[in-house]
Length: 314
Ligand code: NAD
Image 1 (cartoon, rainbow, N blue to C red):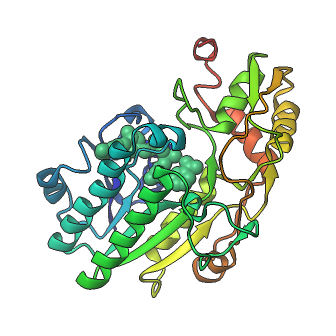
Image 2: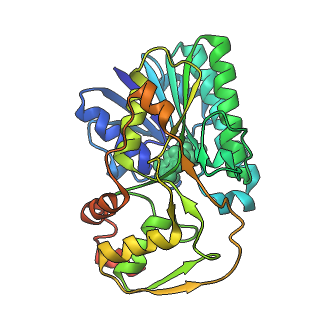
Image 3: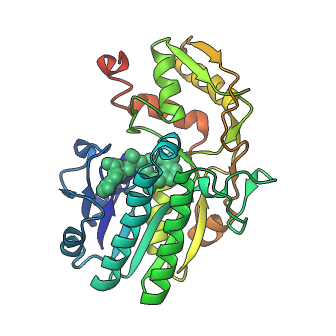
């Protein structure tokens, strides 16, 4: 098959691209490298630097493509609160530009990396796809808006679409920005250097952490399973872990002794999250293979940034 991946140089995009070439597929990748790193990609991926809002580039790259994986996005919740216009431009505008191109070129299927963040705060922790979305941040609003555009344009133009609401993915190769780093790589890094881990609130807030390879398997199933047009699937581990328990697991696997500071600021985010993954299990044969502790150990073994002492000092 011929695949096109937006956000190909990112954490999930590069893992997906590298897996697809190992399976013998042709992969074209696009990324503006705002946070992505093309050195993570196999030389067999045909990579082009470019913006997901660049219409002519999309038109030329989409020729002969069977399926698009759309992952390009701005991905930080706190940053989206500061710059909602940028998030709308890339995450919503870029999606509409891509869907127009997919429609006009005649691509058969689009798989979209949506987010569990679209649920917001719900009364029950275990989230099913039919729960009414209550997005809180501009990031979550942008992912939900993108889902609506994808499903609308796809349904009207005979492009199959599948939206995957990914929960908190982690694993080797996750980008660690200076500000607003995702929780797992930042805890691992601070634990390895005996630095400082800051916990917002009481540490009782829970998330569903899912290992990168499980997300990649789900994305490939979403591209190849028949009769799932216009569907939405949760992709998580199906387990809920509090920040306190995540910290305990990080300390166990690293043996680190960082200083832990509770800042008692209400973190303002969603309190509890766990993906109900029954629909994905039934339709995509999705079965998470890595639990949190095994995933943390594998991340420690394989992550080049965490294992590079010079980068650990920054
Ligand atoms: P990432 O930041 O590593 O990947 C996003 C990539 O998009 C980056 O390489 C970035 O350079 C690229 N990009 C940003 N703006 C672009 C633009 N205008 N044009 C082209 N490329 C652009 O993040 P990730 O964790 O790999 O996330 C990939 C996708 O999965 C995102 O859409 C994200 O919203 C979604 N998602 C991720 C998670 C997670 O836990 N990692 C959870 C839910 C949803």
